[in-house]
Image 1 (spheres, rainbow, N blue to C red):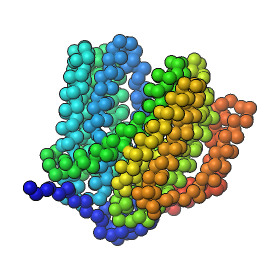
Image 2 (cartoon, rainbow, N blue to C red):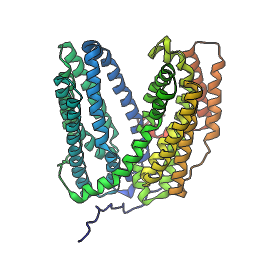
Image 3 (cartoon, helix red, strand yellow):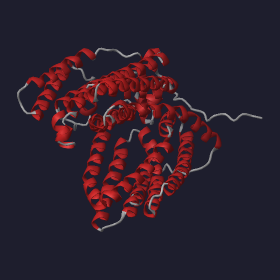
Image 4 (cartoon, rainbow, N blue to C red):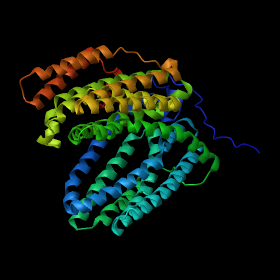
Length: 507
């Protein structure tokens, strides 16, 4: 019996220079000289879009909560949680594999990839929605919630169309288009929910808002793709290849997602409910920030995936720049959050959660490691080192569970935060070790570390100032930024990327 070969992954004909290719590289934006600059600007744009989307959700939440009341809102959240699980499972590493494959294939193979990727994800989502509705029925959900779960699942099918188009848009470095889709979905969802609340709609209608929103965004995504029509189809060799590549990615990602969540679960068993609440409140704030490094690295991933196939010098240069930027931004976020921890906790959680302030300050020190984890994980995905990544994640999660269990039994939330701080930095070291083991030539330089340490030390000096907390945070942030500028800790390419946006003739 003849064995069917996996789809080919053609490599670019020309190697790329360390700083982004040559003008002769052709029309492919991944080979263009300004690819790195476009990724930097795109990452910043997507972070801004994420902030707008979060603001939209924050604005609508009070209206939906008050409209539904305690009982109905609980069911609404439960149905959304079910569909969120379906969304996570249906992705199962397929989007990341799609981005990597799109970056290294030729035009014909890319079209086949997108067709198969969309069909595969639609099939998985359909099965997942059926399971979610069955679970809702067996669990005794109200008929309105079961119907709402099914309708929200139908909206998820339309989101898959948008996300598949975004694979191509991201690989073409069209991050403005991707941001428009993300912000558009958040804004239309917020507008739809507010309109339904004003009309007195029930929980089923609120859950169904994803259908019209998804339809509009899916149509817009297909329009933005400019003639690259995607026709979902069953392609057995392609499906087999995608599933085989996605499984280790999904395993590594799933284990990694357990990192902080495992500490909360362990605390619920070993610590008091109050200490668990303090740690949980701190983590909820931190959770909003740890999305940012992933967004920044996602914009650079197609470039890294292409470079990893043909040019190790460019891969090393890009990862070094990402690590430098990540360390600078991560330390900036850590210093600012530590200084502003009191007003942030009191504003978001209230005076009852004042003991969570030192917990958040300890966790803020893990943010630089969080940024580096995202950078080196992106590098491992690009060089196909997901097996080593999964091993590193297993060790990291085991360490987090062990240390948080000991801390939860002997002390409280502050001790658990310190344990997770150690585990986060250990995870960053494990990722770096795995990356260097996979590709020794990608070992990064530590040239920026002393500059960032100096900037962080002077920034934290603001703790000594006898001024209000927010003013202290502002002073610390300015001091940190001044040292970063004076020592030139930020890679020059990061500044040049935005300098390129100035109109000609302006300095």
